[in-house]
Length: 339
Image (cartoon, rainbow, N blue to C red; front, side, top):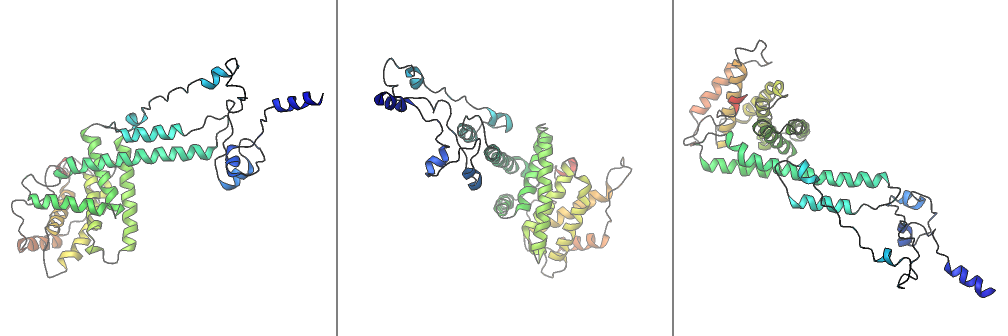
């Protein structure tokens, strides 16, 4: 009689053993579903055993066991994920697919899923896709957009040097980083008819303006800050090329005018760098566009032409000692004329 009771107790399979997280940490689990108190207080994932984990496999090695087929059943293969190709234009990069597959494979098939886990996985996937998209857009800026800023007969040394400088400054200045992405994304939207790039370009533009405001609060002598001036120049170029930011061009041109005035016109040394000449020619060309506008437009932008500034810039350019070789009016090429 006693032997039968012992055998009966041994046949029982304990089902309430707590969550896997508490068992691994050797903590006593209160077995509250879907999230126990220990996991909730510590912010850990509360993972519970699935029905397959609760199977009595003590006799599954027997050939006549009713659990033999289940224990030997192979796991179904993970389906290949195509989300990366559908969300990222012009690319089928395998690292993104692997990242997505890894994120999906780590999802546990439980009846109750913690919302914090879902948000964490979504944030990881979004971060991977965003980084890949920004890399693609920055490559477009280097390969296709940047050459439109300068005339074809531009001095090659300055062309490559300025592009290298922009790439280096992008790593440490978010205002320039997002200004570059805004211009490149807007160019993709217009040239390749990728309509999804329009809101993306506007979001980059908004981030660039916000980061520029933060940079202005940190810099004491902003007239000597190349990244700041480059950011302003790209922001008003975005207004010439993109939709939705043309009304901001005058404000950016006025800011660039103040910067180059303090940077060059108020100093007796004159033009010492090719980029300084580039900035002057860019600003006066944008002032020309804002002053003339289109005859078909009934309303003009809020811009007041300053003839004294124009006269001072022309005199400074005439007496400049910098050799610019065959290129002049570097930003008066094809790109601004499309606005």
